[in-house]
Length: 349
Image (cartoon, rainbow, N blue to C red; front, side, top):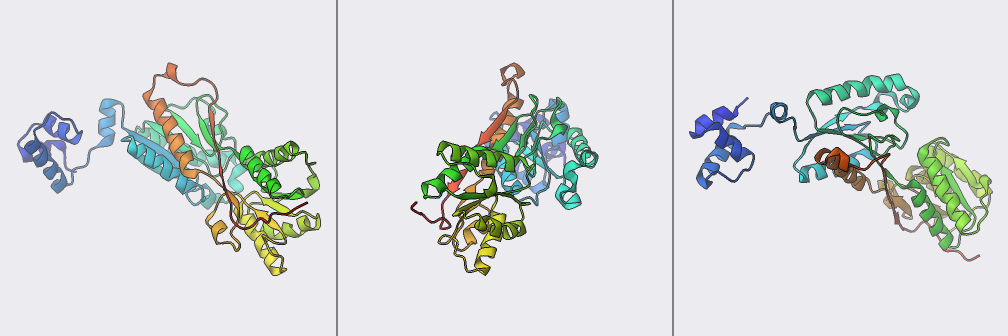
């Protein structure tokens, strides 16, 4: 590994001069700077960030821990966080826990299995002296692991901690569901069915509250018979579409696009036209939404913004005095955006 001392010897300058050039300080002549940068390029010199961090007690490295990068929400959140860190001159180091790849969904209630993986990764991040941690969850839930004071600043993305020590950035599920339901009402629908994910899931519960709130505000009686619960997968949309149609609903709000896709398949097999005979909307703005025929009206989750906002909060905590930071539990909700396509028919009552 090429050292800064070797670069200095190659160029006939002091180690301090090379350090000034590498760190972008202005007190070096133009020709000397060019010579040093050329030697750095030719010899492939890379700073030892860990050693630098030990000296300065700051590495300018942010650790990013993802529960599983195979989750469709994770890459965009990660990209938003990395882009923000890069803009602010912080490097990032990524660890993928692969929780879904290891155990499917069985790990949700297996605290010991979860801790066996996350604790090892946490120890590794701390050993290389990252300045702060950004944790990206695969889905919204309360994560107890980060409830206590962490040894370094930590921020959660896409889940909750309910901890004053660990801020969280989430989406405003309730508002988004309320806005989607209002949209269907504005299109003339008053018999609106809803297909949730698993009944005990935070996304399901908060989106159902938003649906109920919109009905209440528009003086429409909430009918629990128009509510079904699936498992977020396409097949549950296929299996439950018929029972909602039998209830006489004119529109169905699916809490994710995959279940909406299952409904599309059910209706196509029975020559029921989405956007004409029945209206369907989704949630996520997953890639499949734009390729459905007709295009699926849905809610877009601002994933990159969640990542950049989480990174901004983390860097603020790194660069501010503790007494100037907000007190109490900090949860920042990011609003979603309605994407209107062709899957909803305007009707007159």
